[in-house]
Length: 255
Image (cartoon, rainbow, N blue to C red; front, side, top):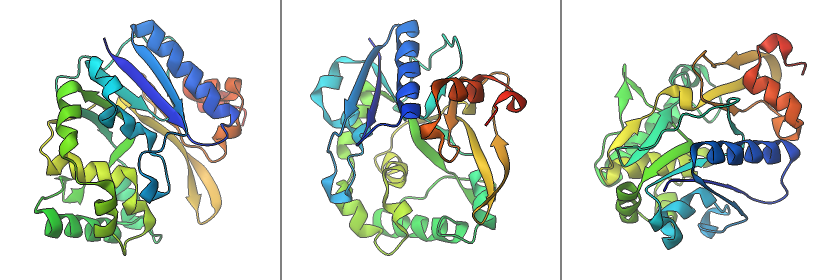
């Protein structure tokens, strides 16, 4: 038996509720158990619950073969019946292929220079090299992950999250988040990492110049499976609007 797990902290906007309900329906279509949590505290030292890590530490999940975690702004396309199970690796996760280029041009805290500082700290502390492509550090997105039973067992070797935070102190807060923690830990303990096809985590987000929105980056393809709706304010959109963003051409979104 496989499982899909999601969580939310605090009051839940209607757009996130809609995303949750879509993922629950997808779980039913593929015959997976569905579990949803609210306000689960796992890493209080980070002032965030990061409930996605429950699947690694809670014995309740030991009964499942593979477990898929997805943020509630990740939507399956209409009628999707394909699944990433069985994983046949320790963890399955998607890269963010455009991020290295975006960060090279960034003048904010999330930029190539700080990525390199982070990688240097990880190398100096734990003696591991972070993977690269064409010379740039790869970026993995923690908003959709698939874990096998073996992978969840190996994750018990992760460095304590509180210790990781101490190591990266001095970098912007983004680098002390769950995403970079997972990025470092999965290579530290030698997980067998399967880079899932990016159709499992396609992004839709605004392009900005400073605070000004100058366009939309729509990375969907004809074979997209999950759409990660990262448009500013999308959590407050109604279900019909979000459905159009996930399943319709941009010209039909009516934002």
